[in-house]
Amino acid sequence: MQGLIFVTWEKFLAERFGPSLLNSYRGAIGETAATAPLATHVYDDETLLLGVQMASRLTGLSTNMLLREYGRFFMLNALTNHLCSYLLSRVKSGRELLLVMRDAHAQMRRTPDALTPPIFGYEALSTNANDFALLYDSSRKLCPVLYGAVEGAAERYNEQVTIIERTCMRRGAAMCRFEIAFRPRQLRQPPQLETREQRQHRQQKQKLADMVLAVLPAKEGITLLELQKVLQGSYFGVPLRPSTLLEALQHLQFVGLAASTSMRPGQDMMTRRYWRAPTS
Image (cartoon, rainbow, N blue to C red):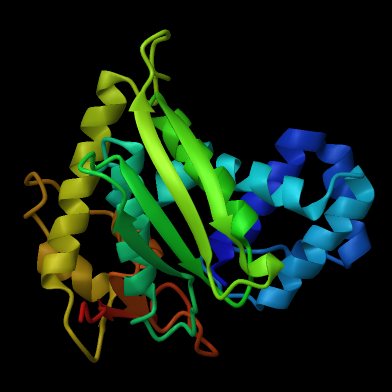
């Protein structure tokens, strides 16, 4: 499971219940500063599932409630907004966001990081494109996270959403089936996700990420410094810092469009190699 899930899970616990609860949680699962999760790493599913059970004991809330609240939080928190900005910046509605999630999860399966994201399917329910059935299939059976994520997607784009879970893997079904209807919300202003300056800055980062993706080799890989030489001077005619390129590479990795040797022993920022992940 992608490290971003673990990092945002702990961020959720801290913001929802306070730093004292997070410290108790970390002590209960035996987490230290050295073993704290990193967004760029991949971790065993069981680690998160055990963590959810421990959080349930500490908070007195059911695992279903915690996972649903976390799913909503994942869609709205600043860290996800930053690290997944390559795709989020292209989305204008809750429906579009769920479609992008499907494509991104399918793409992650093509990377060499041993990720096994859930499988999503979609079925139209009417002539209105915002009415559809969302099909979820995953051995983790984390459908409450998906329920909350749909709620978060609606809130993100100032929409109302109706969700009916017709079948559930947790109740013995072969897959979960959610019937979803998005509608615009008229009574209040949408949340201000970014200022004009922030939007311009994001668009510049988007352009850089597109340029990086265009020059990444399909195999063998390229180091950060080699990539810097390839792109030097082509990005608005100014020098490119390695940290700026690294951020663009990470954004591409979080949506499965780029892969790296980061999980191999002995790799550091300078020796790590990057390449374009296959898209079919």
